[in-house]
Length: 136
Image 1: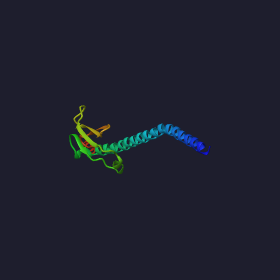
Image 2 (image 1 turned 45 degrees about the horizontal axis):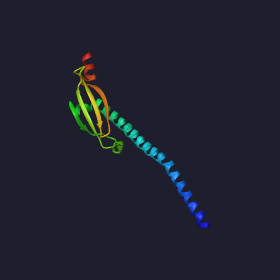
Image 3 (image 1 turned 90 degrees about the vertical axis):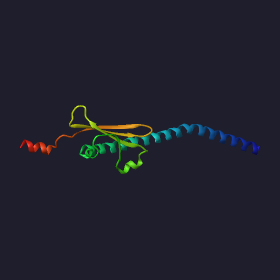
Image 4 (image 1 turned 180 degrees about the vertical axis):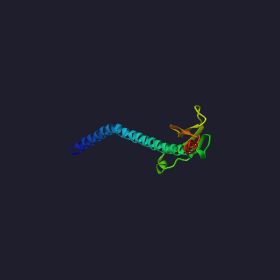
């Protein structure tokens, strides 16, 4: 009789573990997918901020260093850039179709899974100070 009880107890434990495993498996996969999605959002946010900062530097005079170029690879600065997946930041600078005195600046981050792009324009005509002196 004692062995019969131990057998049923073992059977009940195995059944309980099987039910628990079947119930927990979808929850584990949801957790893994959530972590992956959160990491992707973090990378996109950090990349967006770093690219916006780099674009601001280019607009404030950094564009003179590069001149007109097409898909020139440039560095992405910032401590957070070390956390990003492998990718390349490409700079394209060309004359604007609207005016000869405006250049279009395009930054593209390319990695295997996706691409992010930021655009801006910069005035390359005379400086404000030169215009002010001519008016006096």
